[in-house]
Length: 219
Image (cartoon, rainbow, N blue to C red; front, side, top):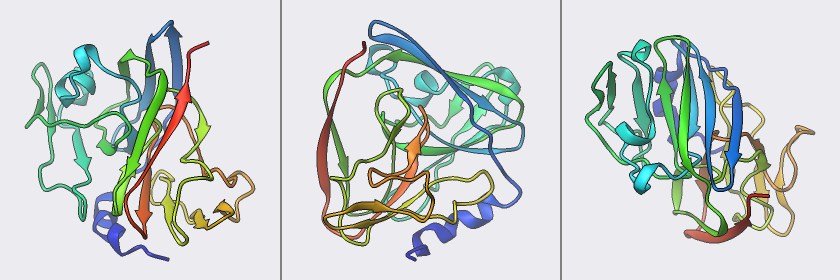
């Protein structure tokens, strides 16, 4: 199993866990997603909507309650976890600010029980996705529960890691060319693991960068 790229997160994960529960509400193409955060626990999340005016600066798109003073945000920098770690300051927002785009995963270390509410537009039509060579954090760009990324995405030997609360799941889906994603868990299909809105995966890509698209329309 290719876990070397994840070893740097091991110390971060010690003593931390997560319990994420989502409620999704939408009207036409505008909606919001609620994520439950628990004190001193780590959540592996993504921005599932397009925030106001398309502004993906975290102070605009990932807005916490004042009870989360001191919360931390960990982002992936391509080969390791980013050395810049924004902190939430009650009444002021994140410092330093950074951009975390729709469909990109991040870890949020909570300081209190609260609800994180993402507000914005729901992407519709043909939605482009891409995964770079090497390792990356990815997520569905629309607020639906669905298997990700699909049986048509992957190189032979690619791996997907999902977060189990205190560590990565031991059941790691692997891609087999011509078949799709395989896991010993009966809950994982050839289309990949089931992700709820605002959940993310860690993708280890063994080949070249990949691009694909999905169609989505709010009914």
